[in-house]
Image (cartoon, rainbow, N blue to C red; front, side, top):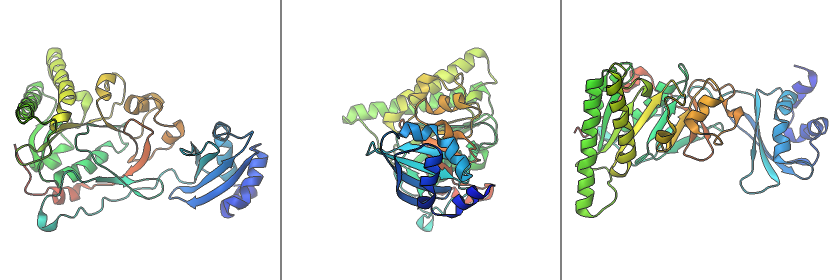
Length: 357
């Protein structure tokens, strides 16, 4: 590290920015505000000609070198055209954070409509979301933390009342830990059991559709009679892979139809894959998946197979650490370091009083 970089890392950004801006020909920029983040420093820049958000973004690598940072992320302001947010990151992620205690008084299951705490963002703030009626896609290469991201959702679902879990785990690894909480679970990639489970779920969809038609309503909320049904698939690419070509096609067709028809009647899915490629994640099915989480991917094309193009910046993928995901609900993606859920904690998260069906 040279002397200039050493001083820049230790002096306030307001004191060093004008020197760096002059060296990099970033004329017409000034610091509006500065705050510390879990990863480094975030600043709001005031822009005037000839500087624009595009000019700042083109210089992001040079700014990172000037400050000895691992990366610099540039975000245009949503409010003003003459502002840009500059994130100078000295760390790649916020690191591993354990799942906070999920409190349920005297073991009573919790409201399934509550927001689920998923992890923390790059500023250290808790990231939460409400997922009733939402299909979810989780993808990332092996070792990216995909299974742990799934555990965060299972932790919330397992402690909820009026939630019925069904699972397909071709690898026989992850969902077995939660076996007691599942109303139906297929371990392995056999076609017969998989097709039977999917056909059962279609029967539930038909029953609920008839019920809504009879009462003149358009939506079902979780109840004892009609719990929130969540189908969890731990490896999308291996569903019914042990069967014939015809059986595999039938299983995948049933899965697509479940995703297409189930949302309005309280039947949703969490689909996971460690093969985030376009041949596994077809565009038609992806369009029906409301929330998508991309963990570490092999390249930009794999990330786009999960999130779709235009929802993330390439620098967001650089140095993605285990458990760090980009979450998009169709709009710009939000980085989130998913909470860590250990094997030992799973048994304490399986709350009695769930609704078996």
